[in-house]
Image 1 (cartoon, rainbow, N blue to C red):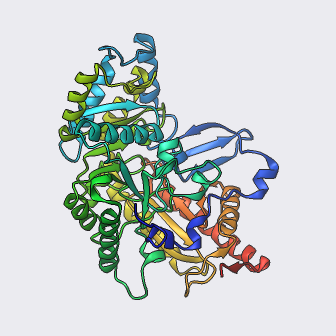
Image 2 (image 1 turned 45 degrees about the horizontal axis):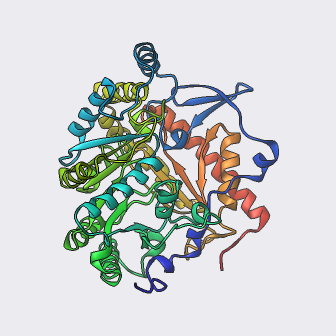
Length: 464
C-alpha cells in the first residue's frame, strides 16, 4: 500500500474544499416553489418567470412542456405501465432503447444495463468492474481511481468516487481504500507557474502512472472520469490530457469508465463527450439528458471485452445477481426513445455546435470583469469563476459566499443558476434560442455587477 499523503490529490488548494453554498436569504425565506414550465422558462407559484440556466440539474435538454415526451409516456402507460427485467423477461421499449444506444456508442459496445440515476449507473459500473476481475481470477484487482473534484453520484460507492468534501464529509466516505483520488485537470487552479496546458497534462499523466505503480498495477482495476468535469466546476481538460491519460491506462491494462451523465447526448456539441475529447472507454455511464429528465432512467454500456467474462461467470454462479425493481422501466424507456428521436429529427447536436459560440463568446465578455478570474466551457456548458484577486487568482474567504450572493441576485432578475463554490455554472436546455441566450447573458451581467457592488460594500477578503 502506498503513502498517498504527498499525492497530487492531497495538494489541491483550499478552493476545492468547499461545497455548493446556498444564499442565506433563501434559507430564511424558504424554497422557491415552481408551478409550471415552458421551453427554457419555469414559473413560480406567484407567476414570476425565470430562465432555467442550469437545465434543472444539467438535464432538461428539451426544455419544459415537450408534448411528444408527454404523449410517449401516456401511450406507454396505457399499453404496459410497468414490467421488470428479471428472469428472462423484459418490456419491448427497453430492447429498442438498448439497441439504439449501442448504435450511438462512440466505440463498439456490446450490452446495456438500465438503472434509474447516474449514481445507480456508476454504482453498477463499480460492481461490474469487481465482478469482471473476480471472473478473470484477479480478486486483488479492485481499486478504482477518480479525480479530485469529480462528481460521480451520492450513493455509497459512487460517493466514494466523488472527491468533493460536501459529498463525503460526515458520511464516513470513501467507504474503503479501494477508491483512490488523483489530480484534478484544472489548469487555472492547479498548473505550476508558467506551465503550459500540454506540460500540465503531461505532469498529470506522469503522476497517474506513478500512483498506479505505487498502489501496485495488479491491484488497480479502473479509472473513471467525466469527459468534462461538471459539478466540480465545469472543468475543461487541458490540451492533450485525455490522450496522455489513456496511454497510461492502456499501459497498465486498467479499464476506462467514461461518466457521460452530464456530457452525454449533445451537451458538448457531439452526442458524447467521449467523441469531443477522443476517449475510448470500456464502460460508459449515462443518465440526465437520456430522457431530457422527464422520467428517471440511466444506463451502463459495456464492451464485449467486459461482457464475456461477466456472462461466463454468471453461468457458473447460476445468475448475475444485480438489478433494480425499476431497471428498464417501459415508460421511462419509451420517453428516452422519443427523446433520442427528437435529437435526431431536430438536429439538436448540430444545433448545439451552431449556438455554442454565442454562449461561449458571451460568457467570455465577462473575463475582464473585476470579479471574474476565469471563464471556461464548450458547447452549451460554461462557467465563470469569481475570485477575490485576479492577479493571484486568490479565492474569496469563505469560498462560496460570493457565489451564493450571485445566485440570489440572478434569481431576483429571473435567472436560475447554481453556484459551485464561487464558480457560476451555465448549462441551459439545448433548445435555447439565440435571443434567449442573449437574455440569459444580460441577466447574468446584471447580477455580476450587483454582486461586485455587494462585495465592495462587505469588504470581503481572499483566502490566505
